[in-house]
Length: 348
Image 1 (cartoon, one colour):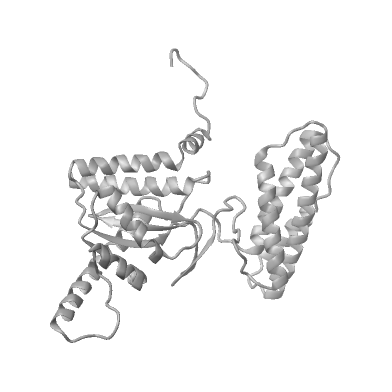
Image 2 (spheres, rainbow, N blue to C red; image 1 turned 90 degrees about the vertical axis):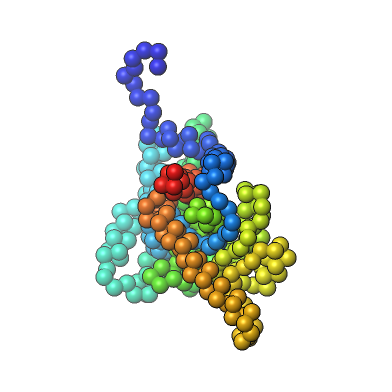
């Protein structure tokens, strides 16, 4: 500043806007620059690679059909009241008090029967359908008067329309499964990831494939849609070759990577794989020697599980808090970058 100033230089959304403007591309470049420096200083030594996949949970409330519909309804009612007052339009009957009382009385019940859940879901669907129609009609009225409505509101209404269609479809079919199910109207890209783990059978957030090289955890692939990590192995090896200008000496992964295509690919590339052999067990000395080596490497593979747990526990990857477009990738890459720099600092 050229002179003393009393006004605030930044508002609450300044950092979010800067991050959004930079985007995921900038943070990928920053990650590559740091990796180049680590290679130049010979702090990282690339010999083998460990691969694994995990889900980084997004910061959303555990979704239920009734809870999601009530959140949508509350947002619609809020927008109707705000737009109506600013445009000077006559009072609109939203039935918000009746809907709120019904949802609160249901949510306070200790035991919620299937019949009660279905009844409340039906009523919430009716309220949301009514409020969406009211908001769209109100927007049409004020636009005729020359009053513009923010683009964000139009986008939210489109998302709410999709949620309404999905919830109506599931209600009619008496099901909880639908393609590309939206579980959060604030973060519509989040999808349920069925993992089958004890205590957390379903997680909500992007699934990522990670690679551990000499104690440094690197992100290979991330998507909000579920994918089979075994099909991403070739891409991981290609990225490894791009970053380190050579192929890995060995690849260590869990059983899901051990399909025939991956085995043949690794064999053709001359990469030794620590995967359990297929077929019957042999008693030959060569087989037993290879088996001992594989068991040893699989014990080493536990390290990547520890690194993932450490990243989630100490570097904020247990919950993604950025809600901007591409915010999940930025959060994950910055968390991994901080952990890798911490590892490098300890070695230096």
